Image 1 (cartoon, rainbow over the protein chains, first blue to last red):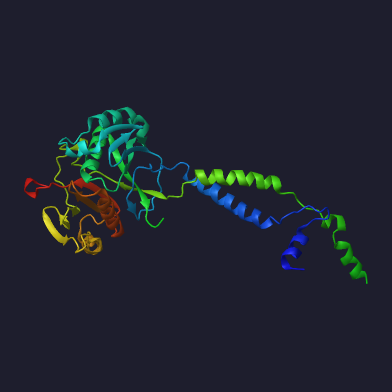
Image 2: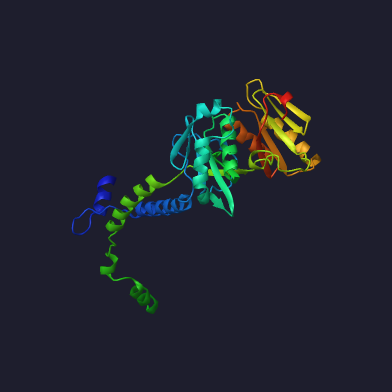
Amino acid sequence: MSFLSRKVTRELADDGVFRPQITSLLDVMTILLIFLIKSYSVDSHVVAPPPNVDLPLSTSDKAAQSRCGVTITKQEIIAGDMSLADVAEVEKSDSLIIEPLYAMMKTILPGCMVDEKGSIVILCDRDVSFAVVKKVMSTASRAGISDFSILVLREGD
Amino acid sequence: MRGLSLFKSSRPPSDMAKADVDVTPVMNVFVILIPFLVSMAVFTQVSIIEFSVPSDVGQSSGQSSDKPRLRLTVLLTESFLAVTEGERMLDSLPLLDNGQYPFDSLKQALSLRRPQSDFSDEVIVAVRDRVAFRHVVRAMDVSRESGFTKIGISGAADDPAQGR
């Protein structure tokens, strides 16, 4: 009797029904399930990076927290789920204040208070010039934001 | 003989030996649950860098009458890096031959200058307008790796003659 036929015979129950051994598969799935539930629960409250933004890499390991966010893509500045300004126009502008962003920041400011201080996280594309970031920071600061943080991708992940 | 009989009695009956747990429903749940969790999971690890805006930027501009205290400043331009303290330039680091910023040299310079500074835990990263944001983040990383815990960001004037 060949090895294959012996194995099949062993897995046939007395009633002739084929019952594959799925114990090891069950073990793998249990471990996988625990891992996925653990990672799901950890990351569920974290600000997720938008798909159209290439965040800069950093060695920082400070955990991200859910805060008010201002997103700067290569094309536009977004806050409160609304596109507020064009990056190219902001870059050319001489003013340090981005008026539509300022109006939006004043609107959403009560929701941005952390420990009685305005706090935002900036999600900025890695290739955007600093001039745009500076104007966003200046506008937010004028609106009453005092704590700033940058969302980055952890290097090596 | 007695021992042998005890050993025999500890064996499960032949009916129990054939008992088989039906794990098919559990497998069904797993097969549904695991693809769902995989699709929802976020595998990209994100973190944040906290920083402050120097007091001469934004709303508090011009409100302080105190003479500003000098902190180490990392000047980031399109063509060079520099470590300054007030008006005094301490180190100037040109771009490498491959066009990259010399962040390793910056780290050494900051580590050297930090103990001599009045504010050994504070540094300001001053950046010119056309520098890409990824270089700003890298400069902040290097500053933190050099031992500075409080990092500020400010703009740097393109024309030094017009002031910093």
